[in-house]
Image 1 (tube, rainbow, N blue to C red):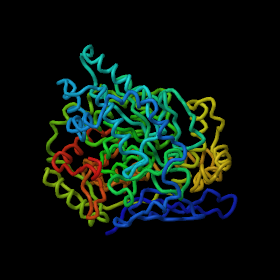
Image 2: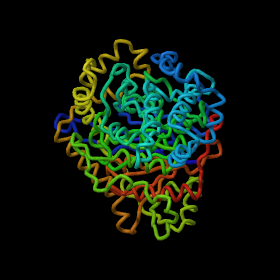
Image 3: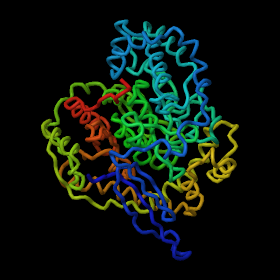
Amino acid sequence: MRKFLFLFIFVSIYSCKEDKHKSVAPVIVETDSTSIITDSISIRVTTFKSAEVKDFREFIVLDSKYIDVSELWSSFNNQLEDFSEEDYNRLKPLILEQDILTLQQHITESKLSYEQLTKFYLYRIRKFDRENELSLNSIISLNPEVINHAKQKDLELANTSKKHPIFGMPMLLKDNVNASGMPTTAGAVVLKNNITDDAFIVNQLKSKGALILGKTNLSEWAYFFCGDCPSGYSAIGGQTLNPYGRRVFDTGGSSSGSGVAMAANFAVAAIGSETSGSILSPSSANSIVGLKPTIGLVSRSGIVPISSTLDTAGPMTKNVMDNAIVLDALFGEDLSDSKSIYALWLNGFYYENLQQSNSLKGKRFGVFKRIMEDSLYANALEDIKKLGAQIVEVEEGARQLPNFINLLNLDMKNDLPKYLDTYANSSIQVMSVSEVIAFNKTDSLAIMPYGQKLFNGIVADDGDEAFLMAIKDSLKTRGKSYFDIPRKTHKLDGFLSINNYHAGLAAVAEYPAITVPMGYDINGKPKGLTFIGKRLEEKQLLEYAFIYEQATMKRLTPKNYD
């Protein structure tokens, strides 16, 4: 079976001083591994075949050297004394795989409380996540006050006439999102004591009553650090493992912990972040729903950056309805974010009336011939047709993204110091990528066992502001043209893809995309059907995804984690 995920290999030619920024188009290698960005100095392409077993000995590091499990649970042991295995099993049918609206109904009917819901997830994390035969290493830290906050939500419930559906729902954040009471590490040792205020999106969630349960592991520095490390690895969090195949399948990256935690039912919902594929990849790899929004719909302030041009946070959930509810709680104008969008709609816009969506009649979706031999995708297209839509095979434009690596290099060189100066704890001494590199060399084996090739590439890139602006304009034009030309020609409502195969092009176009489970291959490996739209078409994408999801119901709970 052919494998199609974007692996961008950027080849730069430096022939003389005057031509130092001239480059040839990147080669796009299609593989079933997650997106890895490398340079021409040392290229290592890793593919994970469906039936290939990755023995633990192949990982340089498996368990975290920086998380003390007893310390992680010290704040909760007394509070969980009254929550037994019997309680866990009694509540399991009410909570496991249930959507937010169902959970809220259970609470309204007094079958469940916010405190019980929170304790259930904490109990489940302690049961499965670290240092046992089923460990997944998906959680980095836990909010020591979350049970007290849940109790408060139970008290507030009677006096809250109209609440957002996210009210009282325990959520996880990717550990590059600032949240008070827990460090924000981006998986890096240099940030292990980075205690901060809440990011804008965390304030958004809390203002609607959401509970912050904890932080999830990630590919360190959002997978723009080592270059030769497996996805799901960070020095702080260790190696995240896929519950559908702990020694078999890749987790996807960089929001690996968020994807794994959702697959394993460790919270109601999780927040991930994406620059190019980092929500879509782990969501499809872990059989969940992940939405990468239009750049600017969701604030980036207080999130450890790669690129102020392309970064966005987004919801990762077990189903489409929950995804819509979380997006609805997240969006909002942030005046401190240069790309923030003032949205005219009120809360409720994304999830209200979603359940009334039941047909794709009259919708036209573009598909690309080169991926149509994937059997799961072919079956999904047939399902889409049965729902009334038309499938239109379109000619692909140029897929090359020249100088993409330079865009990420130059943005991070500028954006990381701004985060460190504005949002990081004052005790953090590093103020640039160069200083992080120097810090990491103080204990290379513990801090960077896979090296720091991509960080070295950032420092070595001497592109100026004019070069950066030219790249931004060029890539955005290429990305938009790739989708806009066939869309206009064939009067399309959107595009259908697999996993994060078109994540890079959607990223530079700054277009939204959502992936929803479309089944499992013969070896049990999850795959997602990905809908791609135009700017601010999240509502339409959620409707398309909801209709497909409800008609097919492809998601299965991973074996051993039911």
